[in-house]
Structures are given as structure tokens and as C-alpha cells.
Image 1: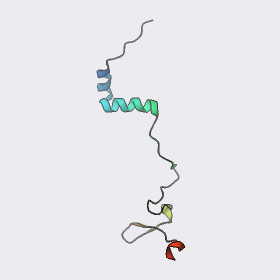
Image 2: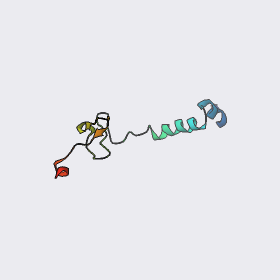
Image 3: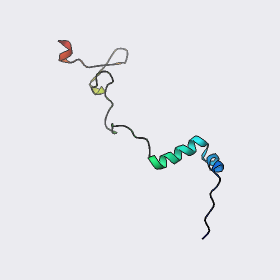
Image 4: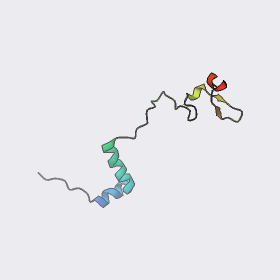
Amino acid sequence: MVMAQKKPLRERIREAGGLYLYINTRLIKYAGPASRGPYGPGKELPCGHCGRPKDEHTVGADGALLCPRTPEADA
């Protein structure tokens, strides 16, 4: 049984498009694709300021999102 010889490492790296791409493709084979975080395709990121869903916010005159007012904040 004759085993096929591997190409030299330098040649395989060159064919992959460089060292970065070579290592990246090898890493993805073992580790899998990058995770997307705890948010699924239907979930929206919460507001970084108040933590509530962004669809509860209103759009201001300048186009920025304004956090909703709560009764506790008004008191």
C-alpha cells in the first residue's frame, strides 16, 4: 500500500492564500464557526442604556432612540 505524499507545508500555505487563511481554515475545522451570542435570529439586542427592548423606544427629532420613561423615574 503506497501512501500519497503530502505537499510541503510552504506550498499548502501558499495555495490557501497565506498563513492567516491557512490557520483560519484549519481552526474552523476543529472549533467550528464563530458563535453568535445568546441572541437567536428572532431576538433583538437590548438597549445598552436601559436594558429594555429597542422596539419599546421612541425615535427623537434627530433620529436617535429615546429610552421609554418609567413611573419610577418620574416620581
